[in-house]
Length: 249
Ligand SMILES: [Fe+2]
Ligand SMILES: [Fe+2]
Image (cartoon, helix red, strand yellow):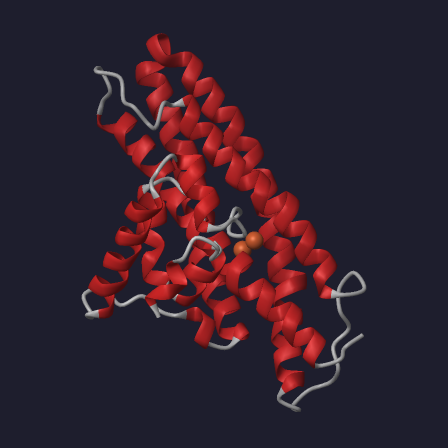
């Protein structure tokens, strides 16, 4: 099974089959959510990490977690409705709580450090405001349009419900838009913040609240990666396949 870690295997295939390998992609800053269609060779070249190192780390992560130290749920084996519920309750729930808290923290930090680090707070404020508006609309679309359709589709596939009407002609249309624009933009914003803050490098005079702000932004980034990974690599392809199998259109 480790043969899956060969140079032509895509990140999406690896992480969907072995979710415990996520820590390796996080460690090397490899985009496993929006960039999941790249293969190992491409990311090794882009990140200047040898294929041998990457493969060895992936194998280690697989073996450690396989020996039951950190069980990670394999969502590719669960039904789609359960995954949609999980994403809505956990990742959407986290985002709805985390962003307002970060905004409050930003006000506090700006009050204390605004005179010396005003430029960075002005940038973060602006970026976080537009990120919040965009991600909020995106989550609402998932919660009110896409996820209900997925639940109805799955019920229909079990011959328990009526044939659902796909949003936007076919579900592939809305999914394509979400992946290419909405998820990609959200992922890029977090990359921009990382670059602007020089990988969340704290100034020497940073207080506890400043550190809490950077920690919070990094938690947001980590959670968003996992969130988009579950959608792009498992929920979305599974839904497109199920819609085809059910001959909805
Ligand atoms: Fe989502
Ligand atoms: Fe999403």
